[in-house]
Amino acid sequence: MPGISGAACQVPRLSTILINRAEPEGRRHFDLAHECFHLLTWESMTPERTEAVDGGYSGKGRHKRIEQLADNFAGALLMPKDLVTARWQERREKDVHRRLVETARTLHVTALAFKWRLVVLGLLTKADQLDIQDSRLSGGRAEDEKDKPKLFSADFVQCFQEGLAHGRLSVRRAASLLCMTIEDLADLFRDYKMTVPFDL
Image (cartoon, rainbow, N blue to C red; front, side, top):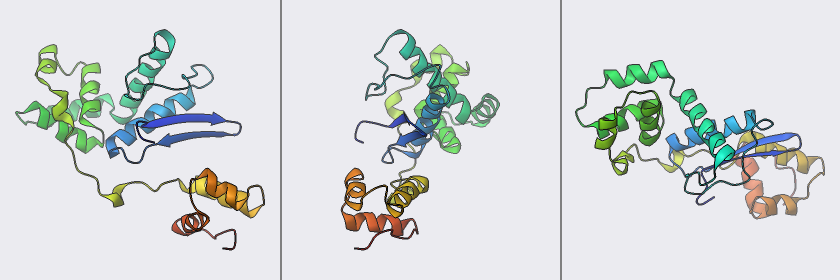
């Protein structure tokens, strides 16, 4: 999903959140919380079908406000006020950028998301904000391939396995939907320690 960090989808009998596993851990956490808001409020605040790829909300009015609420929900869920206040006050680094990056790392969020949470909570003054260069907040631990989540959730793979086992889905169609070869599909089930529901 190049250019897409996350998406919430609702289809009959299934609510799903898709998260780009190539994103840094902190971004994935924030995206998951943001998309949870959309699923929780789908009936009363239906999100736009698509949002800007760059993360900015070019829309106006109601849909822009829904996205702001989703961001605020994610920020409050991942960075509760009391915890953020305590962590921010206990750090003593002189360089504000290092302080933001290090504190965000302990909370498993991005430094940029942490900065905006501090702004929302009134813990960063306007003068502090002027001193911060967002381009210097991209630091954080590099992620190894082994740290990335698996390609699909176990529940998702199990849905495919059950669909194949009960004849509701053909092997070729399942492989096609997942953009895999039939051999890759068999390996997928093995990776999740599931019985391969078809013969090769």
